[in-house]
Length: 337
Image 1: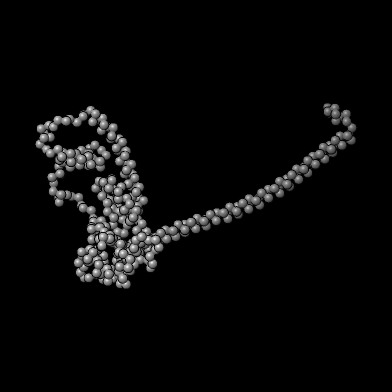
Image 2: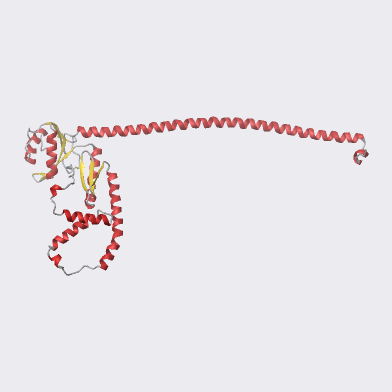
């Protein structure tokens, strides 16, 4: 058998030494691998401990998040309950003040020591109402125990009537007639409401110029509800902010309609200029009547978007201008406060 030359030529002792050296080198390498395996094992154990710590922290955070969500839910429920209770308190305050009337403008100390007797004597003379049975009060006094320094108007008198019907009679007279006069001094009478309700009513009343400008019928009802009607559609508003946003949307639509219809109207007027001559048919009518009818039709056409609806409004207005108003199918709105 043929053997390699290096092994065959090398002595047997040198071959054994080389084998032993290789074995020792492999052993040292194995020892290094063992030490590395030990270190990797320790690192894996530390990583497992860290992962376990992270898992416990995540579990703790999840529990805290659940607790926060539960607390947020409870807080939202409590907020809703507080809002409900607040509205109930305001409603109870409004109802408890239904028999109260505030009198503004009476000079200081004119009532003397007995405000009830003063009101019993002055109210029939001031309003011209005949109260049957006579006026009776549960209590009557000046608001605020002491007049503010620098105030240029007298303190109001508040009176709690014994009969609610007399309160309604007096307030109705004040709404129709306006401020009463006593020695050239204006005397006003208003209902008594909670502060929040009074603020809502003032905000509603501040929107009256815009409602008139947009030709919207409106009425303010107790305690603070605004009723409006536009294009035979009625809406109720309990928040002045909602009504203001609604009026803004109507104003935006009106501006868009006017910007779209104005160029077409100018083109039509340029193509068909108005004639200065009166035809025989026009001579049979009064020019003022024609102009008034044209303004009425123009006002009605502003409430419609489509051309067909405009024509329908014109026909309806022409057919019903001589109709008896008592036979109108429209239901009149309730009497506002």
